[in-house]
Image 1 (cartoon, rainbow, N blue to C red):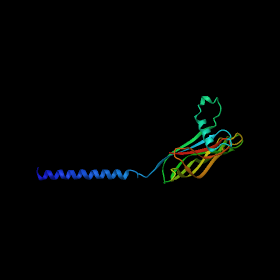
Image 2: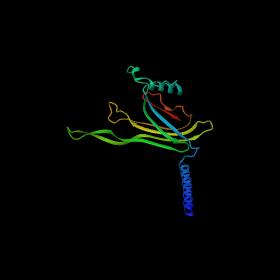
Image 3: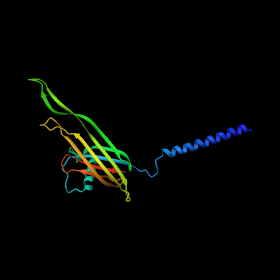
Image 4: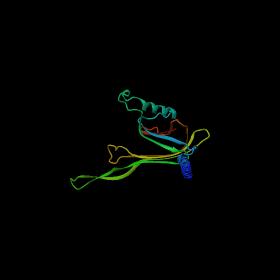
Length: 205
């Protein structure tokens, strides 16, 4: 074998080694560190259509909501269910890094009416307003295996107008809480005992 051929083979072998090392280095650079933990977070907003019994524990309320959601429609005999799902927010979260989620829309709200002269048409006064939901979620691990979570939840929505009013009501809900969340278990975030109230639950896995 000539020196020229040996040189070409050696150069090809060295090039192959360099490309292999580059490929491994690139894979290590793009792979997340082994200690990074990613959670699946689910926040569910329910509308409660009845007065909530003040004697119910958190677990009893969650079980009643779950039973209401799972009940087949044909078995309700036209009755309004105890709870209905209004919104569900799902997102992935890296432990130790704050997650921010914002969902909303701009709506036109009738704030009044104006008559354009005698016998004229009625003009509605419209005001534009932003409504929606803002979620901030921060977490850190604990020795027990549960996740310590700092949660900020703010929402606003347009409700139906009452018969004797023109402008609809704007419902608002604002929560700031620190909780210990066990993996795989649904926890009550907030609830009210009034009819047509909101209940929020949160779960992570």
